[in-house]
Image (tube, rainbow over all chains, first blue to last red; front, top):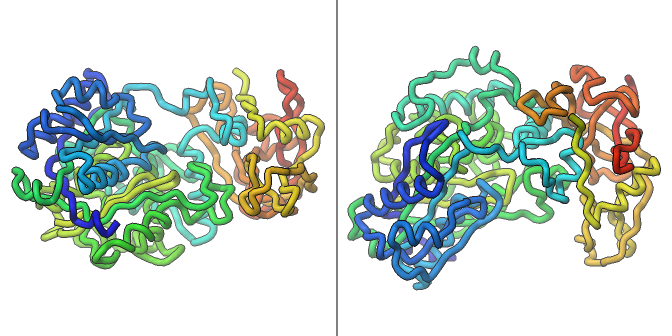
Length: 382
Length: 145
């Protein structure tokens, strides 16, 4: 892995608008994001020879390559486990480019969750495992599954709804600075949070990410090539995936210690090959499908000790100027929920110095993928 | 609308067969005697492919719980808010089963006021009446109702 350190860089990023409802198909949205990312990098579509996305991505590389006019493709890869795959797409492209399997890689995610079907409704086919052990009992949606962990976390460590509100507020405040965010002009107050409707107690409306239509893409090339591209290179410093021993996916309750999730495994690998540690991270983009994932991830990635993640959110720590500015475009909670890919593009903007909530002279950024499922993470540096 | 029935797979079938007879049993390695859940073909501790189904007392404690509210599937939305609990078995503390706390084996999902649930509360198993496929779900009664 040391061979991957800073060997590749993100040279281009692109996205569509984010909205509850976009008229175009997922395929069209994917092509728009990819073409925009290539344009951002100043690289021709005909030079693309590698693709990486999520297994849950429904636009496939054959169709995308054909539509954008890619050249011969020599590497393609898809990563499983939903939002856990976001950063792994970059890891796979970095490995492909660094080992000479390809030279211009594109990673993307296109989704119509705002207007399209919601997966929890699709119960006609229950997965045999673990569905037979959870669905009949009314544990139906990701919010119910994470709510179970959240309640236990509150019980064990004294975390409160105010801690979860700190997370929701930090994301919303940043979205209020970002004209592209779905919650740009919609401030959040503690009163709104505390009186909002329940989704799955102890989680309320504002503990849940947004249902969004939209697409995003990144272009990955060698570090050498990136230095000749249009934009300031953002280097892939360290990458990791994480599937812990005896992990059970969203319903990790069967693990001996369900509160140490995949973040812990990814983090061990990530820091092992990095030249810096958690104290040196200037800004973080941490997967926030649900607010309790933030304290759990803060612990897993080593920003604080076990059980200290909730207290870490106090005193404006996650706001600009705080100890660890978080999800500076608004995250999944307030910018858009596109399976975490918008966290990657915001990490790139921070290190280019072009974020709408810029952390002064940020030069290192942690980006993480979905916690609670087999996951992935990257350390970016400028 | 009715509630979802378990979609049983080969590894899980013995659990449901015992449950249909009103017995709570846990897959246990025939060689190293370690229980495991969910059921799977190979023992993660000793890699043996031989397993038994060990009866357990049916007593446990609430490890955590949620109270889902709509939007939910229609059958569940009608009963919401209801509770879904995770029960840690007294005889096999590493085994935790998702279930519901109810006032009686045949009572609806929303028969217990969620305000009465606590992490650590003692519960004991009962089995729901058979569904259309003859499957009986384990359900839980509070030890101190």
